Length: 481
Ligand SMILES: [Mn+2]
Image (cartoon, rainbow, N blue to C red; front, side, top):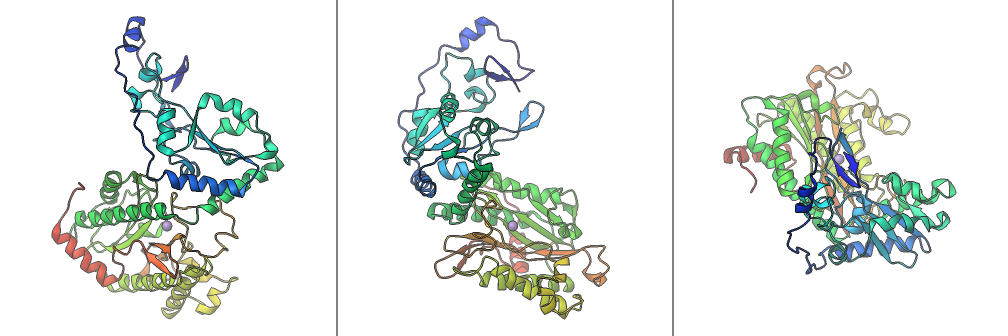
């Protein structure tokens, strides 16, 4: 993308004769939307801004959303708002900046819809309505999101007036904003802002729980679509699986919340197998780890491991049932007031005992579970839980005391996803186990007195998975809609 007279154009755009330019600037009806009402979610964003402001009384807080990122040459990736910014505003547009003032008021700086007597609306590939569709106005956004709005061209002056000693910036998102406000106290103040935002986001309010339910419901539909389309008696490509799920994600939601892992056979032992360029063969297992991101950007994160031909072999079932037992123990451990690690610890105990029973673990389960040992982890590889919300690995910047070493509370949403992975070249396990990878992952809401499995619509027990697959296959493939 190149910039000519403030308009972002591309090298292959045609020249603009003055007669055409004059024609383009006139002859348009007034399309200003004057009847915008507040979005249903606007009050939730206001409450979150208030909660954040209360944590930093007397400070000005600057939270940008970021801009477009180059994919190649003059084409960009599709824009996704910064999660913290989105959580505070509900705005999907690029290049915006939220400023929370010490008095508790807020201003959303944005690049508004251009008037039609300039070239921007028909020439600019980022802000031109004829290129990207309807753009927001200052008044329209103020009404829709119930927040004061200001023109982005006034931001530089506003930032220049701020004292770094009483300002905190969410850094690393927008280089222009980073450069505009000096760093005080070695960046510690800014780091606190990032951490507190993540910690506040650990607890999902009722709006967020509703969006997560929608994301999980669409994800369940996507898993059903895959099973309906997956033949039991001939091989297909992992890309078919990825594509079928991706269609559901794009149709019912915004997109996939992360790159789909469609891992057949030994690929299931590669934790983040997203190349998906292999074959799905009857007799193998298919590990599908996928989540729909809903239109308000909340994502599900669900894994099922499915017997492609519809029935687990004896050894596949043995591995699967142990992971299932571990997951059951992990889910049962989730409730308010217990350590975040409780699900992991419960699941790992089951796994270690199972591996010891099978003679695979070279030490006792007890010894393996000691912090200084951990030999079972050769086959479990990853931890059992992470926070889930706007980001698939949500709240990553929360301090350990609030998250990994913290305590579960009502409104937290976390995954419980134990796995067992026997690499194809692992000489320490009997041959029949090699190349088998199993993970089962569900999305768990911490309730006032326990837990709710948001993804319970998808069966987990091995015999229930088989019956579910048989039923769906009888019904056959379907398209969304
Ligand atoms: Mn996960």
